[in-house]
Amino acid sequence: MAIGMQPGGGGILDPDGAMEHLSAWKGQIDRLAADTRAMSDRLDQLRVTATDDNGLAQVTIDHTGALVDLRLTPRIQRVAPEAVSRAIMNTIQGARKKAADRAREIIAETVGVDSPAARTIAERVDQQLRGVERGTVQTDRDPYRW
Image (cartoon, helix red, strand yellow):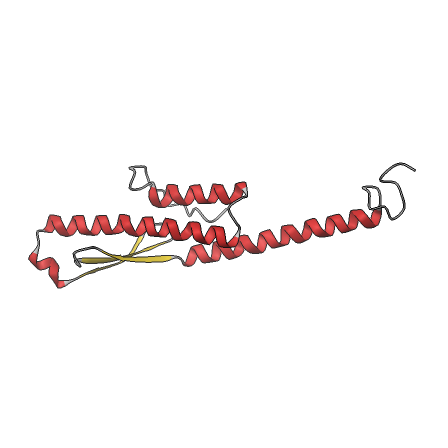
């Protein structure tokens, strides 16, 4: 008998071996799907709050880098409006950097960093969150939804 055709030999033509192989493969796919769902859920919930160094403004952004909350302190009354604007914009950029870092951590914790999909998602996160400060256009598209 040829290799792979032996009864119970576990070769490709062995029905039991093929079923075991398919079962293991399905288990891997199921785990990847669950990990991907967990990653997506955690990224959707991601919020980052940052405060400027002078205590003028506190911003909160969501997973897309969109501003969801802005709190100004009474200190803004003692500085020029341009300084307040700069403080807000710089704080938003800092929050986006923190969000990108945290998103990469979430990706690594849930789906790992070795797969092409994980690398693509991480690149999209960087483009969405860090790309804004590099002068690229931010889209309204959610980078975590397929």
